[in-house]
Structure formats: structure tokens, C-alpha cells
Image (cartoon, rainbow over all chains, first blue to last red; front, side, top):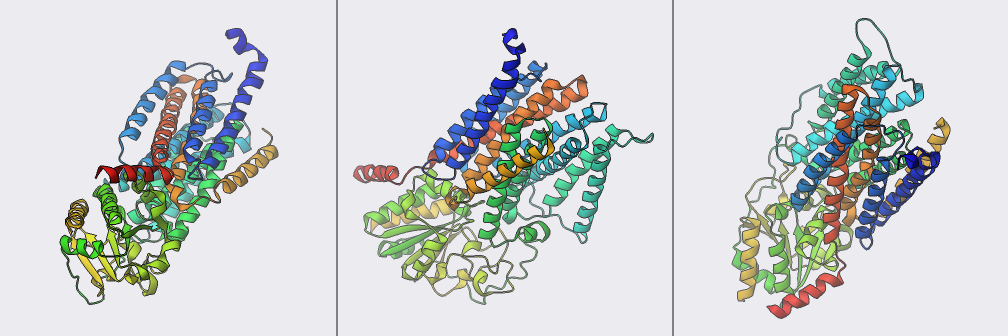
Length: 474
Length: 105
């Protein structure tokens, strides 16, 4: 084995070849993941490629020791990640993505720290490589601390949105300080008063704070876009460190992800009608700019589950609009049951999904798929919006901002311009809602007081259950 | 690696990433985000090299952190993505289940 390891062809041919295959298959896997038919195959392929890349790295000629540390780190972290990933409910998926993404960013930053440390102690790699290491360190660290804050916010550990006047200027100042420290580290600045190691430490601490300070003022509603952005940043950081370490597979995989997720971030921001600059630099979704309640002057009209069941059972056309609230109440299985009993009565039932239903675009589809709802019943916003006018009943369950008519016509509303589902065009609208409060973004909803709207107050799962038994008894 | 050669690779990789995603339906946004999150877990490879080369307790500690974090990214990212995509079934499969449920009831 050691002869094999020592032989030149192994290090210079077999390992690079394995990395080459891994990079190719990772890209093909990602491609497969962008179509529902091949998605499952895509992740398995990518997993195999990753396994190959990791295994051959143990034999990498530059890996000269520390095997025990390596294995301990991989096993301990791997087991933790495995268990947490297996246990997390589907509703909490977005924050887990944020968490694992933050770990990737942190890893890239730590690699940069090792490389910059070595460069600072006589292992000269040249200015270009050093600069790229520094850039990756900056981006990776911001992605790390930012993602952790995003995780904490979605997990509900950090409810407060922390804002004060001039915050953006302070953030800018922090960022400039960080960059100055970074530049000094990269050029190997030497001075008696402050050592390079101290500068490096200051650089990383400042970068951590920048990530925190950037993310803390952003409200929960905008978190998906932010997570997506940090995902792209981590990809870039990984790509940069791949250059520094001279591992092209890492460079390619990192940059492919960086570019792909940048596009994904744009698609999401577009779906929410929130330009990225607004997400990062203005206070939407904080609940403090929705202003006083202007619910259009009307009052909400309540309805009982029995009456709702009758309305739906004798309808021809029912459209269900699920939101995150449904998933939190774990009502998706009951809703699917309701769909089935209605279908048996000959009612046409469809699901209308807003692009940002759930905590992230596509999240609601995952949740409905979990409950067993087949694809052909689920319609996107563009396909179904014209059909609400022909619907006898629209059942809104746990959704709020995505059905708020203010987005269509109230120019003063913070969500003005966001595409919404035209639920109010249906003959009857039934809204299942826990209480009378505002939605995730803290904005009043005129739909609730409209003439054709009825409120079914209560826990989503319980109400769905009552609807099912209501329809069954008819 | 030579500067400009690296730049070409970066450019081509960026174009590839953009094109690969360009036609993705909204249905898959969340799983795809998760999948791409898994793919940048290749950072573990770099972390292993960094730790493998590390000398002295400081470098070893930071290298250990790099590997620890990278492994979490890879394994967590994979499991979460696989769990989500596992549920995505073609519309004929759940329909068959419906028929069964209908007969049973």
C-alpha cells in the first residue's frame, strides 16, 4: 500500500481522475435535481460522487497525518448531522438548510484561516492566492454567522428584530474595518505593535460580527431569500478556497453552486416581488412598518365548521389555498382526507400554491407531498389565478399575506406589487385561522372582512377534522 | 494553478451553474436549494487536506474545526435533501394509493 501511495502515478493521476469524475457527476446530479422526474436519482448520484471524492482524499499525497483527528471530526459531526437531519420535521426544513449551509461557510473560512496562518509564517504562496484566500475567508465567515442567525430566527429562538437609526452606516463601517484588516493580513503587514496573528484574529471576529449585524435586522418573512443568498456565498467561498488549495473539483463544485443559487435567489426574490437590495437594506417583514390596522372598516364574519362543510360538499369547484399555518398545525393529512371525501362526492378539488407559500419557495409542495397529495391536483399561481372566479368555495388554511388583496391595489401597503392568489374572486371564501392577528409579515388583511369571506376560527388540524366529519355525515 | 487558467475554469463553472438551474420549476426550489447546499459540502475535501497538512496545535485545532463543520454540511445536507426528494412521487403513484383508500372506505 505504501509503495502504491508513494508511486507518482497514484498521486498525479488516479486521485485527480477521481476528483474529475466526482466534479462531473456532481454537476450532472445537480442537473438531475432540477426536474421532478429525475430529482431523486440526482441526489443519489451526487452522494456517490461526494463519497468518492471524500474517500480518495484520505489517500491524497498532501495529507501527511492527523488521520485520527480527521476521523474523529468526521464521525462526531457526521453522527450529529445525521441524527438531526433524520429527526427534523418537514416544516423545519428551511432552518436546517440554513444550519448546514452555515457549517459549510464556516468550514471554508477555517480552511482560509489555516492557509493565511501558514502564509503569514513564511509559507509564501503569492499575493493572488493570498487575496483569494482572504476573500473566501470573508465571504465564508459572513455566510457562517449570518446563516446561524437565520437558523435561530426561523427556529423561533430570536423573535426580536433589532433595528436602530443609522444601523446601515454602522454596518458599512464595520464592513470597511473588516476589509482593511483583511487586506493587511493578505499583504502580510508587519508591525511591532500588532502581530499578523492578532490581525488575523481581528479580521475573523469582525467578519463574524458583520454577518450577525447584517442578518439581525431582517424580518422572518424575508429569511428564505437570505438563506438562499448565504447558500450562494458559501458556494463561492468554497470555490475560492478550492483555488487556494489547488483542488479544481472543489473550485468547480463551489462556483457551480454559487452561480446556480444566485439565480435561485433572484427567482425567489422575484416571486416575492422583493428586490434583493430591499431585503438586505430595508425593514420589511419586521412588523413595525405595517402601520396601524386598516382593515377596510368592515368586521370579520365567523362561520361554524358544519356550515362550512355544507358549503363545500354541495359545491362543484373547490380550491384549497394552504399556507405555512396549515403545516405548523400538521393539518395537511386532514386536508388531504377532506379532499378525498369531497372528491367522492364529485366535487372538483384543487390546490393553489403561492410561489412563497411555506417558508421557502417549493416548501409547501414538499409538505403536501409528505401528506400524499398527488401532483396533478396542485396548481401554480399563474395557472390557477384566473380560475378563482369560477370556484364556488376557496378554502384558505393558514395562509395570510399571499392572499391579501392589498398587494393588488393598495399602493401604501408594504406588500404592494407582490403577486397574490385572487382568492377574493371566488363566490365564497372560508378562512381557517387560529385568531384575529396579522400574518407572518404583520400586515392587516382586507380579505378577512370582505362580504364573501367567512372566518372559521380554530386550530387548523381540529377544524380540518371537523370539516371531514361534517362532509361525511351529509 | 495559473491565474488565467483558473479564471477560465471559474467562468465556465459559473455558466454551467447558471444553465443547470435555469429551467427549474418552483416546485423544486426548496429541495434544489438543499441539494446545492449539499454539493458545496465538497468543502470537506479541502478541510481534510488542510487538516492533513496542519502542523502545530493551532493549525490542527482550526483544521479540526474545518473538518467538523464540513462533515456536518455534507452529511446533514445529503440526508435532508434525500428525505425531501424521496416524497416526490409521480402523480400516478399516489393515485394508485387513492384507489386503495377508496376501496377500503
